[in-house]
Length: 195
Image 1 (cartoon, rainbow, N blue to C red):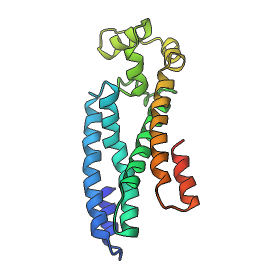
Image 2: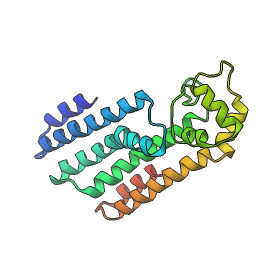
Image 3: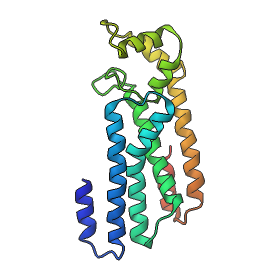
Image 4: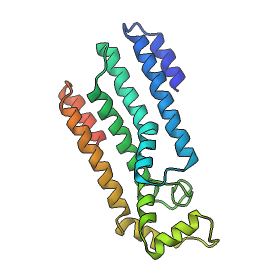
């Protein structure tokens, strides 16, 4: 898709298309690095996890915002880069939360994938967190107690924790968005992405 995006931009008559293609290349590489970290499944604390999703998802949304800006103005701004990056982080955290709501093939916990709610759950010192930790370490062969685990995620603070982290980035994005010259329709659209 990114190669096709570069090719499509190159075939346009935009004055600043070379700068846009350079941005696609630069941010695609960042995103690929983040995707590699995600595949390694080694981000097991908040800081490393947020850095990984910033590269993986934040880079892609920042890229989209910056390509539009450079094609329109011939320059980029830190404000657009930052709110674009934060939109990606927010959407990734929302996806992480959503993946835990269904006990199916895409459930991060069942697939032993780390996400903010799971990192929080594993940091708790209770029977469920110990059971989940054993499951992640292949120490048990029995299935997880889905009801107890779902209750710990929902009522034990893991989901609320992830929502809180998401909201931190929402307010950061809103602060940057205030300083960007954009029409009301565009501003409202971007604000919806931050929910």
